[in-house]
Image (tube, rainbow, N blue to C red; front, side, top):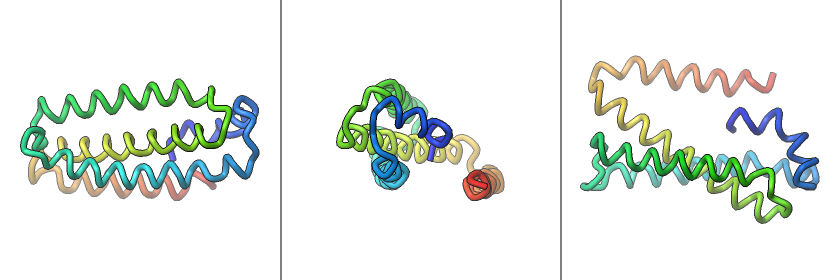
Length: 134
């Protein structure tokens, strides 16, 4: 769940007019999109044209970040649950795609030397996700 959604759920409820039970489905939709985006990223970054090369991967990452910024700008304008679910799903897909691409580029640039840093990155990311709700 991106950090913007946690504290913003109360104001998002007022802005969009959605009920708390409707907003409670947003994290699930976002995480489903992130899983799908990670799988999609694995396929995209394994394509011969992209192949986790620096120019090809950067283009995909920049397009993903642009799409994420557009979705984030449209989120407060969502007045129906269907539109909010669609935006959240798209946001999750591009977040998963971005994470897969970033991990791919880190491994491409640093090779075997990146292994302990990648493990620590994901360890502390997981610990933060676990402890953040407390």
